[in-house]
Image (cartoon, rainbow, N blue to C red; front, side, top):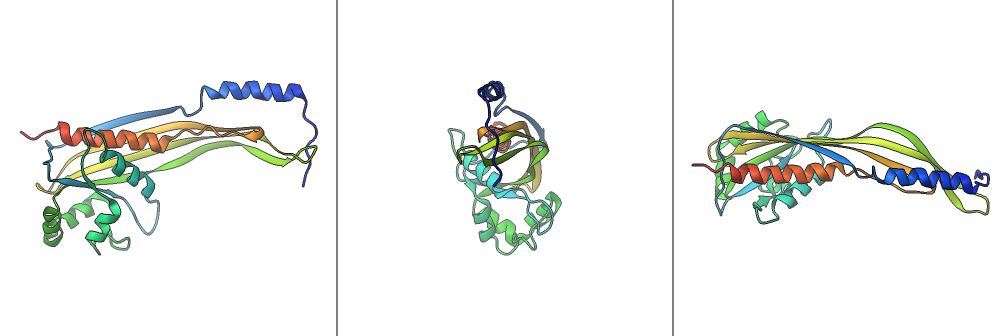
Length: 231
């Protein structure tokens, strides 16, 4: 294995100073929200919502981890709304939402929701809204690298600097089962820069864009449904 030359105290101190400057930037995430309302909303005490993800056999799928996060956050807090999970929904409505025949866009979801058998089952379970989430988290503009080797004395050491920009962009369309209409659309977009400086030991500073987008979208969803009360 390749051995690194001895590093000087001054070079290490210089790297540590640079690393300190990055601390202020770590985890910096900017989130923007948009809302488009098409109709009033409201939900009864015995009603629930289903949070579903876009999935297909080909192409990019919305991450299940993101759907789980939105589901968990929506079902918590003083303003919580009861939610049936994506997997439980798929199992309950087998086989209509299995990957090979599941709707791949909101128009196809609307067609399925108009199926009498599915509509009757939705109503019997008290599912008031279907929340269809589409989107992904992507890593873009990656630069630099971190290389590791064995330094003098047999001590493993890593040096370098790696950075990338992450974007988490998600959209939720809300379908009212009771009225068979789309009541609105929500979106959350989070952007942030992540760093992995390495001065002997790599120290990652990760911008949690997906987590930020999850919190934003869940809070939006609860407010949208509950604050748009029907008259």
